[in-house]
Length: 172
Image (cartoon, rainbow, N blue to C red; front, side, top):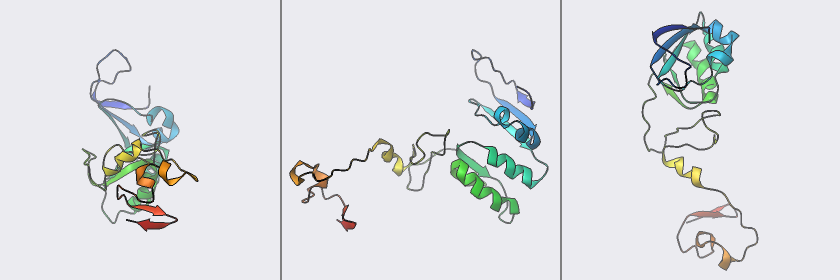
């Protein structure tokens, strides 16, 4: 593969070689010219730095990205390009960070650790956080089934006390 310089490490395409850290450099123009070669996902400890000449190139490269788990904007609040990058990156990643590194995830209500394909194949779910349980749920609609045959949580008596909506009205 061409189109980049090795700044540190020794990148290898040898499948038998152990992964080794590598830092690579290219230009935004090279990424725009050949995104398939330079933007495709790379597993292992590697990073590609794309140097850009103007903000338009930065946004153009962001638009070429495939689905990611995270995207980080390192900027000042008044940077005009940040306002343009934020909505682009929100379509590309499940978690957009501002002046932070995407290290670690926590089990909280606001955690999202998923994203558009190919970062995940289930864009409506997350693998971390309180919403992660939805990955294991499969909706089933029971139509005209007698109450006694429904699962307990769906019965009129609702012996489990699970809040639910019936005809659009929330019942505790």
